[in-house]
Every structure is written in structure tokens, then in C-alpha cells.
Image (cartoon, rainbow over all chains, first blue to last red; front, side, top):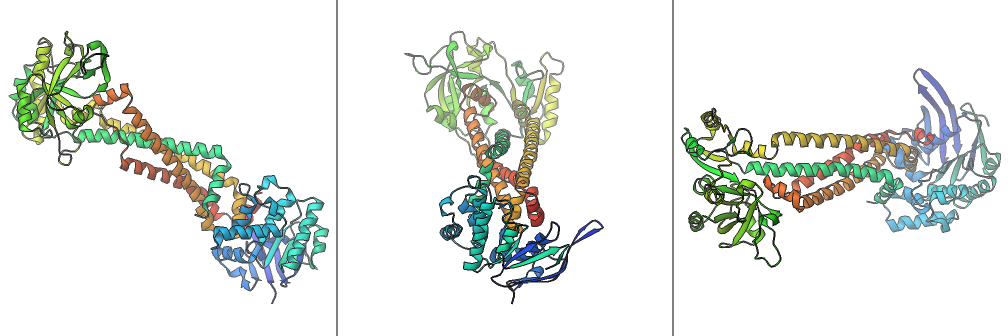
Amino acid sequence: MAMVDVRDVRKIYRRDAEELTVLDGLSLQVQAGDFVALMGPSGSGKTTLLNLIAGIDKPTSGTVVVNGTEVSRLSETQLAAFRSHNVGFIFQFYNLIPVLSATENVELPLLLTSLSKKERRERAATALKVVGLADRAEHYPRQLSGGQEQRVAIARAIVTDPQVLVADEPTGDLDAKSAQEILDLMETLNRDFKKTIVMVTHDPRAAAKAHTKYHLDKGVLTS
Amino acid sequence: MKYLPYVLKHLRRNWIRTASTVLAIALCIFLFCTLQSVMAEVNALLEGTSANRLVTRHAVSLVFNLPLSYGARIQSVHGVKRVAINSWFGGSLPAKKEGQESGEGDSSTTDWSNFFPNMAVEAEPFLAMYPEYQLPPDQYQAFLQDLRGCVIGRKLADKYGWKLGDTFYLESFIPPYRKPDGPFEFVVRGIFDTDPVKYPGTDTNIMLFHHKYLYEGTGRGVAAGSYWVEIEDPEQAGAVSKAIDALFENSDAQTHTETEKAFAASFVSMAGNLALLLNGIGLAVTFTILLVTANTMSMAVRERRTEIGVLKTLGFSSPQVMGLVVTEALLLGVLGGAIGIGGSQGIMWMLTHAPGIKTALAGIGLSELNLRPLVASLGFVVALFLGLAAGFVPALGAYRARITEALRAV
């Protein structure tokens, strides 16, 4: 059974009488442990597809099943719980909370669990160690470089030990060296920690790290 | 509780904005508590009045006295039970001088910081119409038999440590009530108590002495400050008042008669209008602060739109995100409320301890001004309401925010 199973999904945005079809009958299967890159021009529907897989948006029609759960049928509250347990999200602009330290940022998703403060801190420390930032635990985002911020964001994404990681242009805001470090880290997470990764990217070097590449154009998969 | 550090960090994010919002709420609660405390004291003062007592004073102003002959004429009005002169003496203890016996002094060294209400009355009829003042019979008789004698309330006795037989001196700030040879000497002949359940609001921080002593001491030059009139039937208060005033309609000193409650109200700056004014000010300030706080909260939340999207992406549900914003707003209310209540308590302590103001307040019967627990609790509730009301709209916005739109607002 595929970790991610997208079947005949259509996503239409409506504004007044105008309709914009972003995904048009798209189907996609991602096997557990796979590392998938979604490529395509701007407006092709990459991020929309990623949002559907991550459970932060719902399709107009079709089904999205992630880790055995039909995401497209869940209520808003059920979706929130689904995201907290099953999906780790890596943003292009890191989106760390500026008033929280690296540890506190990583700890944030664990506030939704029943773990004690000590356990939360231990898990956050472990996640920061995995991304190589144990020595920056008490630093605030403004005190970190772009690459370090993204690594903190990755630590936040993996701290709840989700099966699926979705990344939207994770290297889009980084210099070449930092981008390479982030890609190496994602490769490690995929290879050593068996995380299923779905990554949207424009960068061919990033796509080269993936096992499978898909191209989207005008809401349909072309390859 | 595990979310509290997160909320506190956000409040510290823009500490100037947080501090100004807290201070705005604090100002509102400060005004609310202070004004309501003043109103509560005024109401307590008015509660201590009786419906079957009238006050007849000079129609022009309380400053002018009424002829002594008016007493008998008022007594003749149908429905009047008894009449007593009551002149507000306005005396204060003379300041102590080095090497001088305690309590002695001259007019130039009067200590106005030790002011308390003191009245020259016609003792027998006045005490007869005041069942509130419970005086032992032997002390009552001793008072009647001593021209220099006085009776004091329990609170006043406790304040100065006075006991029966003690003497003290008072000097009035009203020139006609002064003696050329120095202050009046008084002997404590009675200490009265009151039943706070039966007679709530009765002030025992006062002193009463014989009007005859004042009259004789000033060379028989003073008249009556006002007449206190007890009537048979409180229902007839209006008719009796009109009848009394009609008696003196064509005289040089026309009178104005009103119930004791109305008199007390006018004495504390027309308390009816005062209540309206104070409540109006309080309401206007509260509403203004509500708008300011709501605007501040909206700005704070709008700035964090992306963060709200991130929280929801991480798995925080919409009610949880809304709860965080509401908690933040409530914390502002709690902080503002605490500071406001503390400030109000502080200003009331200052008012009741600052010499000049203390004297002025005591003069109108407000010898004590306290922040009552009920007022403080109400103030705290208002502060919480302000926080909650100010945070509601931005919290609702956070609740409704769609992740995809919130994340696009980078």
C-alpha cells in the first residue's frame, strides 16, 4: 500500500463567477520510504498538490490517502490532529517563531502531546542533534544563518516522528552551500530514518537527490 | 499552563506596545475603582440618614445662619415632633508646641491635619432624634450637666485614645466661632456607639457639644447654623417642609427645608449628579480603552498572520489558536487590572493621609475612603472583560484564518 495515494484529484478555486482549475484529475502514488520531487513551472499546481498531501487543504473532488487515512474526508479538527501525528512540513522561508529559541521552536509541535516538559525538551534536543544544531539550541532565529534556520525548521518537522515530510522549496531561500547541506540532511532523513519525502522544487540539483521526479504542468502530471 | 510561556514570550515581543496597552487598561481600572469607591462612601453617608428628619437652613447658603427665634416657630408647625439647632463648628485640634501641655494652643497654630466633624447642637432634642447614637444614660446625664462637656463617637475616641474625663481644645476656622482668648476647651463626658446592622452608614468619627457653650463663648454673637427637625410622619416630609419655609417666606432670612438625605446629598456636591458624572466618566473611559486595546490586539495578531498559519500547519486546531490569542488578551487585562487596583488603593491611601485633602474629605463626612473588596473585584472583572472584548475579534480572525491564505501573507 502506498504511503501517499492521490486519486483523480481536482482542485478548483472559485472567485465570484470565475473558476480556476489548478489540479485536473491528478493521480499520484508515493511508496513508503520514497523521496519524490515535484517540479514544474509556477502556477502548475505543485504547492496545491503538496498542501493536499499535507492535509492543509481539501480537494474539490477525488481522494487523498496518506498513511492509510483518507485525508480528504476529515473535518478541520481531525485534519489538525492528522497533521500533528503524520506530517512534517518544511517551508521555503523556514517560518520559525522569532520570539522562541531553537529549542522552543522545535518543541512547539510537542505541546500538542501529553509529554512532560522534560520529555519535550529531551526530544527537541535529540531532533536538534540530528540536524547538527545541538550547540545552537538556545539561539533565537535572528541569531542563526538561513541554513541553520532551515535546519531548525527541519528539526521541528521531524520532532514528532512523522512518517511523511513535505517540503515546499526547502532550498529556495538559501545559498548554494547551505542548500547542499539541507539536501544532504533530507537525504539522510530519507535513507537512515526511512522518512517518506515529497518535495516541491525548481532546483535541478535538489531534484537530483530525489528517487522519483514528477513534472506538473497546468494541473496534470506530465512525467 | 504549558502554553503560558509561549503567550508570555509574545507579550514581551513588543514590550512597549504591551506596556502601553496594560497601562491603558490600568488607567481605566484605576478610574473605575477610585470613582466607584468615592460613590460607595457617598452612598454609605446617605444611608446613614433618616426619612423622618428634615434640615432647615438659610435659603441663600449654608454659610448664613438663621435667627435663634426660628426654633420655636418651627416647633409650632403641624407634624413637627422636635427641633434642634445644629451648627457645624469646623474646629480642629491646636498644633502641639514644644514645652506646651498636650492639646493646648492658640489660633495661629491650629493643626488642620487633625480635623474631624464637630457640631454644636441643642443636646436634648438632637440626641432624642438620633437613636443611632447609643449613649449610656449616666454619660448622657453627665453631658447635659456640663456646659464644656461633649460626646464623641467610638471611632474618634479610638483614634485619639480619648476616654471619659479627658480634655482637649478645638479652634474653628470660622471667625465668628472663635473666642478672643483662645480655643474652646472640651471635656469628654460620653462616648457613643452605634449598631452597624440596624443603622448602616452611621459615622462615629464625630463630636457633639452644647450650642449654648458656643453661644456663650462667643459673647452671644452667633445664631443657628441650621435646624434639625424630626417629624411625626415621613410621608408628610414634603408638606411639612413647605409649611416651615412658608413661615419665613417674607422674612430677611428665608429658609430652605429638605430631607436629611437631600441635605447630605447637597452637602457632598449634589451626589445625584455626582453619581451620573462619575459613572459617565467611567463609562466613557472604559469604552475608549476598549477601542484602543482592541485595535492594539488586532494589530498584534495581524502581524502574526503567518505564525498563525504555521501553528495550524503544525497541528494546532483553530480553537487552540483562538485560545492562545484570548489568553494573551486576558493576560493584558489581568496585568492592567492588578496595576489599576493597586494604583487606586494607593491614591485612596494618599487622599486619606494627605493633610489638606484629608481635612476636606472629613468636612463632608468622608472621613474614610477605602477600596472595598466588592469594588476591587468588580474592577478586576471589568479588566478581564476589557481584555476579553478586545481580544475577541482578533481571536475570531485567528480562528477563521485558512492556512493557505495565512502562509501566503509572508
